[in-house]
Image (cartoon, rainbow, N blue to C red; front, side, top):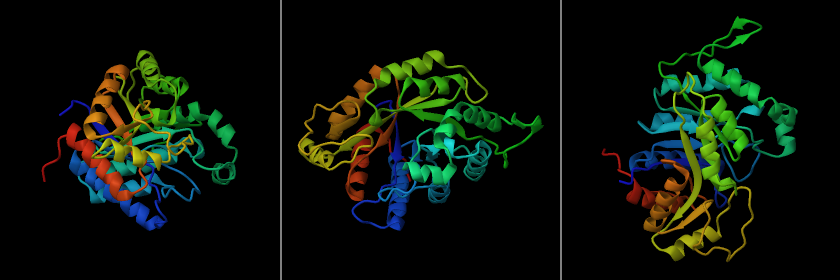
Amino acid sequence: MSGITLSVLDLVPRLRDHSFEEALEQATNLAIHAEKWGYKRYWAAEHHDMDGLACASPEVLLSHIGARTRTIRLGSGAVLLPHYSPLKVAENFRMLAALYPNRIDLGVGRAPGGSAHTSMALSGNFLANVADMPNRVQALKALLKDSYTYEDVPVTAKPVPRIPPQLWLLGTNVKSAAMAAEYGAGYVFGQFMSDTNGAEVLTAYRQAFQPSSLQKQPRSMLAIGIICAQTEEEAIRFAEQAVMPGTERQEGQFENDNDNRLLIGTPEQVRNKLLDISVQVQCDEFLVFTPINSYEERLESLRLLAGVMLEPINE
């Protein structure tokens, strides 16, 4: 309809005292509906020891969702690479790519995903691991193109799928964009977590992009918060109760003069804002984060948005 591609970013929240099991089933339900409504991708985030979030292992959740869906691309938003061996990450996502051909995205980021003590329990000195991030991304890229060596001995991440996973880097600043451009990976700018101008960051990524064996042209997405409802007043009410990463919002703060972190309104209002933003940032794909404190209303927001932006998949 609009010429814009929409995808879903799910933090896999545990809402209103629901169990972790219910949160994971709701994540699966969200992916199933997103596929039916025409969203291109479902991405799950990774967090650790956080009572309100249920996904510590995106690759396990994606394997389950892959068996319950047919066409939607599945990915991580993101695997927190400083915590892990690049080889193990490559093996996990090549396994997924072999199970679900041409459907797997490997998004990586550098955030801790939990408290300082949780991060230390998970992988030791997190700051040292973050400093090693460029080397880990380089190793991951080499593993995905079967050119990795350890002490000059070839090491292959197996299984080797017929169609490899797509590599994406996620970030909220020019530094992460520069890394994605240098390694020839896709890039997702987390607008919903940043006050930085997304247009500037994505322009810097495109200008610095170096073609690679992974992809020949730059490929970017803008991750953005969206709350849709039948009326503007209802959307604002949902937004008053929303929890946005990296910020504290006060009750009564919202009027419908939103910045680009969180778009609020009727489907038509949000559609018009997205079209304007797509021109500003030269981006034709949005990764939609929906911070509504109800599973049913979250689904309804995504359904309403799809209704004015996407072509549903015929059963």
